[in-house]
Image 1 (cartoon, helix red, strand yellow):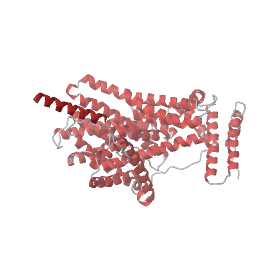
Image 2 (cartoon, one colour):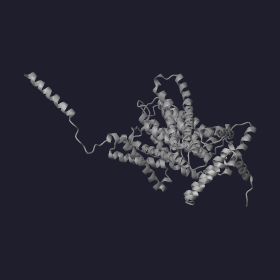
Image 3 (cartoon, one colour):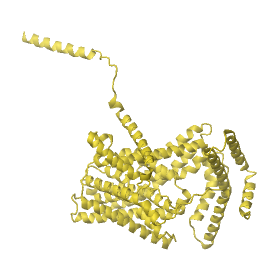
Image 4 (cartoon, one colour):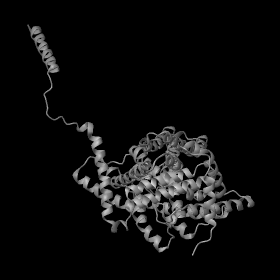
Length: 570
């Protein structure tokens, strides 16, 4: 009897289970999907927040004239951190994630810096920029790392770290961010270009020291030599990927003749693919993005119509500004979103070493450039270059990506935030008054004309001739060589409807089109032309392009050349 009862109970439970399985779900009018849409919703809120912050900063212009945008964004981020702490908001909604930063926020910033870099001025100051970016960064890394390692050896810090961990920290704290200054072009390009490629070198050094830290127990002399070789392979590989991406971007836009609306998309997607590919291969993705932006612009602009060119320009700026704003807000929020360990000695030592060794590096390298290359950098400009080395998001992105097994990670994180706040808020706020006090030469806004281009070319040829007689090879001769190769081979291959022109003809053709288009845009913006007159302007542009055909380009060159030699009329 007992067995029958038990069997009956089991049979009843089996039927109940089957009934639950086949029972239809109850109808619901609303079916919330927060778990599925949470990430997209938070992303949209962040995009909205960055836009509102930029609008807010434009409304407080008197304050922004004193405190730079980046400092204000950090301060607002700190304010949001306090608000989120009071509300008890989950950290995952505003944490500074290194993957998100390097995969999505950093690429637009670096590409924007390369795309809008004045190439001519950059290569005229190439030796200075590369000396400060490469030699200066390596010097700062080993100087800061050696000094901190010495203090660590005598137990001055609250957390004991290995030597490889100290140098890992030194490599990331040596990264300085590009600073846009309203100064003369030479100083602007030197400060901006040095900071751009300094970031790339810092990331390369960080990767090398990270490998040393992971393999610290089995580190041998042979691995140190491989690390030395890896430095050049990673950096040069980034250059190769950047140039290749620029060429592919130009070719991709070249074939969009009948579908010009697609050209801006290809011009922006191909560089990003190059950036990701560099990360996959372990080349320098920052160098790849910067070089791609610098190399591609003259070719893709020739392959797109004016709306396409403006689309690329505006999209690049919007993405870069939005990424910068989000990044600096996240830096302010990092006061509560990451784990901290405050060590006064370590923080103060780091700030002091960063300031001192940057000054030493700039002064020594400037002296060496003067002796070896004859580059004369004035004392005022050297002071601005020293003072313009502001630490920023890249240093923080690297420190939060440190392996979790590093005991001093929280101490390193706090120190990096302290250095960033010190440099961005204090140095960033005082650099503008310093420029005025030192009476730094400002950039003169000048309009490019055909005559000015011809005069510049004549001066370049004269300098190149003097260099040939003297038996030297500097910027002018290298620039002339590249322009000849560019006119005869690169542009015909990478752009549409481009003939093999002489260097002078190519410059005139590009300048005529640029000047006429700029005049048309200026007239349109000032409402001085009606739509009919704008159509006339477009026909004038087409007529000028026809004048640059095979039978007339030399005639136009000769006429303009004669005009440049004519004496001024009273």
